Length: 130
Image (cartoon, rainbow, N blue to C red; front, side, top):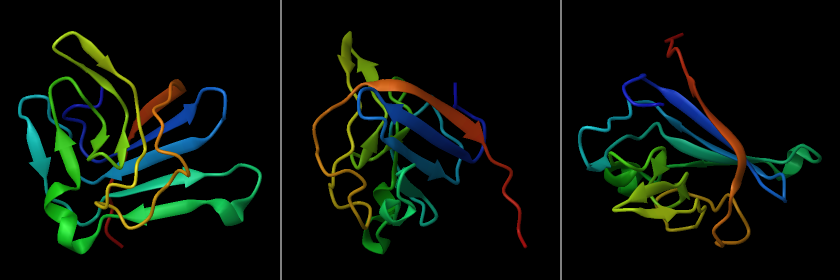
């Protein structure tokens, strides 16, 4: 659904908690290859609809740029393991997770337990230069 669409923002709402998590990929996702992709512009975020002071934006760490995004034919969007939207590999379904694995500056969730999405979408972004 998001492969070969150019820059994208992926946003999801966690079932039961209502937490909103997402990430920005300035590149085009690919399902034809598997591996890490380097970008310094990627970021992940969490939004709190009740308290704007609790919103978090977490940029990829400079030293971890080479592993900011992970591409896989069965697992997209995949912001390394700091925000993983889920997928299926060799018949096994993997639930989403947001963990502080150190590829992005800040954790965007207070727990690293796996969760279920209530819903999520990927939006194509026109990248403009001002």
